[in-house]
Amino acid sequence: MDKETKHSQMEGKHGLHPVVKMKLATMDDLVRMAFFSAVRNAGLNFLYFKDDISKKWHIGFLTGVAGYFNLRGLPMYFYHILDEKPKNCKFVKYSSIESEKWSFCESTPASTKWNYLPVIQLAGKPVFF
Image (cartoon, rainbow, N blue to C red):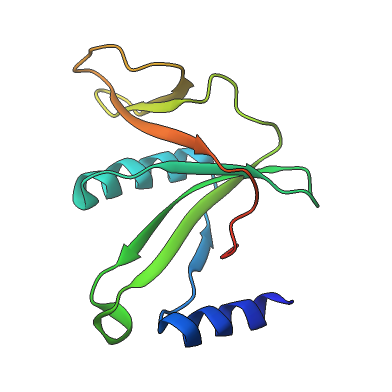
């Protein structure tokens, strides 16, 4: 089944608009957008998976634009493609104090300098991708 058919079936069955995918230029852009979206949306998770065809890793987050598309909202997936699986990838830590910095990490030690978001590995490519 092709993507168009899947999307039209999802929309018809549930009355929902298909997810809009937006590839961002850099991982820096993705991290920055995620942390500022998390503040507005009371949290979010990074999701990542390996694409079986390209053998690359897709990392991103799912969010929405409230009130759009007949007030049902517009689901959006912002993502970036990585050549290799991220190491130490349980959380992303981010700080914009003095200069913008981020990295993957294994835990969330108590610190007021860093903000953290969880990173979840999916078993495979999501249906909306």
